[in-house]
Every structure is written in C-alpha cells, then in structure tokens.
Length: 209
Image (cartoon, rainbow, N blue to C red; front, side):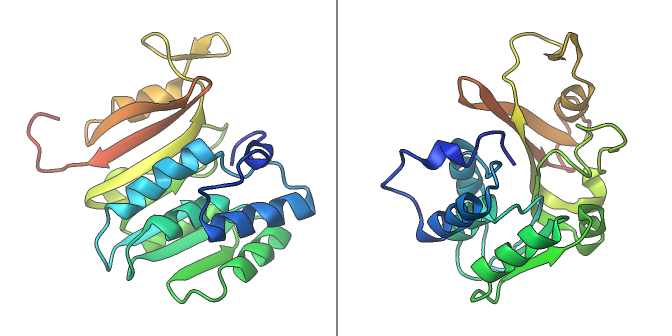
C-alpha cells in the first residue's frame, strides 16, 4: 500500500489494465487512499509475467486489490494468487473485484497466517507482517517461504543515497537485513524519484551469494 497511491492514478487515462481500473475505482469509491502506486504496480506485473503456469504468488495487504490486479493482469494463465487483507470491508471489496477468477483467493484475515500456505514463487510484502519494516514485525525467513529461484518484494522505500541506508536519521535495519541476507540476491529498484522497491531472489545453489 502506498501513501497517496490512489490519487496517482488520477491523470492516467490510458494503458491501465481493466482489472486495475476496477480495483482503483473501488478505492476511490470508499475513500481508500493507499492503492499501490502505478510505478510499483508495473514492476509487480513484470515480476508476475516471468512466472510459468502453476506458480504460486502471495501478497500481504490487498487493500482494494490494485497491486493484485497488476500482477493478475501481467501473469500467464495458470498462475495462482493468494492475498490477505486485515480490514474486513476492504477484503470484501477485493473479493468482489476478483470473484470471477478461479485462480485468485482473497482472504480476510491477519497476513501472518499467509506464510504457512507457501512456499511461493513470488511473495509481495507491503510493509506489514513479515517485512521487518514496522515495530514488532520480524522478517520472514525466505528459506521457509520461497521456492528455490523465488522472488520477494517489499515496496514503499525512500531511495537510498548512502550505505548503510538511513531512515529518520537512523540506519534502516529492515533494508540492511534484506540487502545483506546470505540466502538472497537483492537489489533496490528506484521506480520514481521518491520511491524504491526491494527485489530479492532466493538462489540457494549459488556459491557466490
């Protein structure tokens, strides 16, 4: 979920997947301001597009479904999706948005329950459970939740300009954790001047990681 993300679609009239339009329109309708920004959505769609049929994608923090819609719209037929949303009202909205798609399961509940349904080929963390970004949120173990070659993303970072990356005058422990994780090949992708996403791939057989 992105601060001001819903408003970012206001001037975008073309080149949006229909499912994304629907999810964002639902966000506007109910006053939900945190739809994933389109820059992140396009990156997620690209990640999903690389997956073969039969792959399993998981997401925390569905919102009204914008990020999920980007991925579903980009993926090949046969890719399956699970997304958890804690807010019951938003979960119900997203369930309606994706109700016609048998390969998409939107669950109303605590996203920490998601991790036991893996391992996943793509895991999209919105900054809540499993990301390590918030107080009391321990980072999920990628060895336990990702298939070999699987990818994990965490969005809504301010682009780093130094090492170690800083946040509010202190070392950004979450970002250092993911960028330095011994079981991951990780990078920070700047998708806008003010916005970056961590992309981390689990490559257990690489000796140079």
